[in-house]
Length: 72
Image (cartoon, rainbow, N blue to C red; front, side):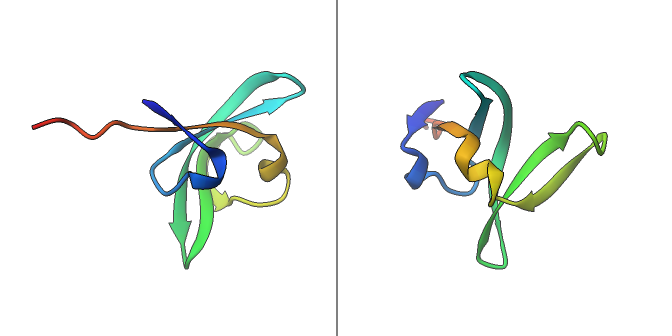
């Protein structure tokens, strides 16, 4: 995977989040109805969900990565 500037992250990219200073969570960035969403495992709900990428998530994101396209 290649590092991507957080503002340049788009659908399919992986976001890494941190509480305090340590990475603790990750998810895939998606888009629904022209708005960014996040697919991730939600501990309290005990399932994988897709929810708006907004609010507290924006403050906690620390890194973004993109899968490399295969060379053919």
